[in-house]
Length: 426
Ligand code: SAJ
Image (cartoon, rainbow, N blue to C red; front, side, top):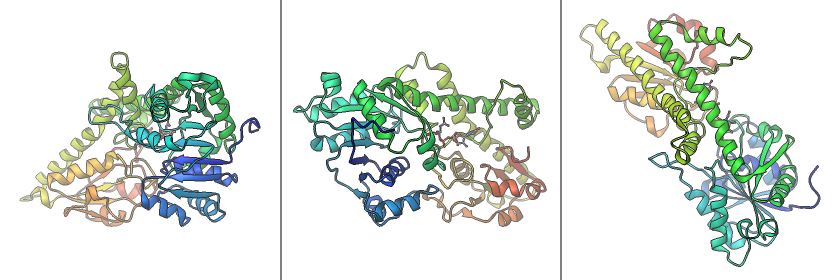
């Protein structure tokens, strides 16, 4: 039950992306007045017309209802509210150092309209200490108000870190049902945050401090990264030893306390390939396993590319008088994981682009998109159907385990040269 000590009539979400928009919409679906803020005019206009600018199951209907019923409105300029949630990107810079500039901009944008009694929650995945840093930025901008670092429980503005932890493709369901880590800078901030999330969260809201909450989110994604790296390393070992890694993983997982993940073409997306670096950056001497796992996973696309290159050279050798531009390679899958349309930081996109740079003809098959992304818009790459690709390609490489590829496994099996980086034949 929501804590009746605190009431939130107006909630503002800063950042209307993959996390911010679904979160804002769920508050609105519980009949709260929600003001969504985003720097993108396109995002703001799309949302205000009741549509969405991202792809996420179920979200379109919810946004449409929230906007037409008048509970959700988007704007580029922040407005006063009872609670502010910040869900902006936290990428890293070239040297793997976290880039907190979006958090800084968001803090500076809301500082002028903060009122005594407000709650500010940082949801963006952040390095340990970022919530305190955000509070310091707010305090600098508003010397007339007190913040937890000065006034603790009595502060005018309460601050917390409550990381999002939902799986792309299942965001709406997981936002409601997953347990939530609530890291207040004070006990009061945690209490207020629990009351706020309980408006729509059905999972448990577990209270800790802000630094532990920050580390918890980084730990979850590092855990997955390290485990995927183990699977990827095994795949490279098995290749040398002429053992099927897929069979090996299946057999080892028959042990009651073994649960190995799946090797693939590498780790993509905006989360798992980024967040472990935040731990490495703060504790470089201690985070040896976490760093190595990142390196193993970052190397995997190069390893897959080398396998495909070898197949291309082999094929050239069998086709008398052919040059590299005569060889057609079918790249099956471009998304960063199965059955989604998201190509962000996708190893499959990088492999495809690097293959094209060799000079071969590429037919890319990605059932979840209609046009090639700008990164792949070049003369020797075309988008094709699976049937076209299988019919014409000299070499096929399966880069993503999309369902339509699994369904076509028997056809793929008959092709003379098919490189399987995701275990489609297992
Ligand atoms: N992958 C493998 N083998 C596997 C599992 C995944 O190679 O066995 C690859 C995928 O193909 C993909 C990458 O790893 O390229 C990441 O995919 P994912 O499904 O593991 O994770 P994301 O990035 O979609 O979402 C993760 C989730 N974190 C955890 O599962 C610990 C999600 O709960 C987080 O909210 C999200 O990161 C985030 O926003 O941080």
